[in-house]
Image 1 (tube, one colour):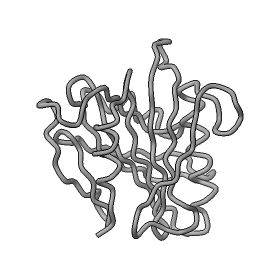
Image 2 (cartoon, helix red, strand yellow):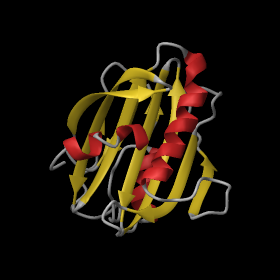
Image 3 (cartoon, one colour):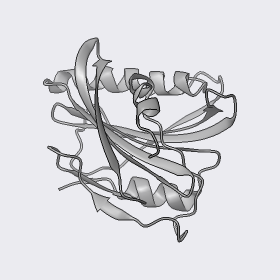
Length: 185
């Protein structure tokens, strides 16, 4: 990532990652990564940078850790926060989804405004409640250009996660490689 400072300022509204690549692209060098202090593993298409920031999740200051990288003009990212209480996961993940959609100027899921779609996400090892989900949306970047976004939201114990891709256009192959790689060890 060229600069994590700009995306980190938006973390309460959602993580940013930009992607417009096919999974088989030579620019994508998929590698397994594991966010620190979690059981999660996933594939990223480039060597990730790491950053941390204190953000208000569920109304409380919370350390959010981000791993992300740019590949062929695109960025992938995963964020994790430990809420300290599994009962806080559902409302925090719902808020995170809403803020992400608002930030990218996409309509909330199920409202008919903008284009947002909620899909189930099978993720063995993730908490059953709240259920793991994947949000697919079309919106705008801060500069007004079109952006496609896909984000997975899930929890395990008191940890909440967001794995995202943002790009002008997201290829099905890259999205499938990224989201199907999410697993708990």
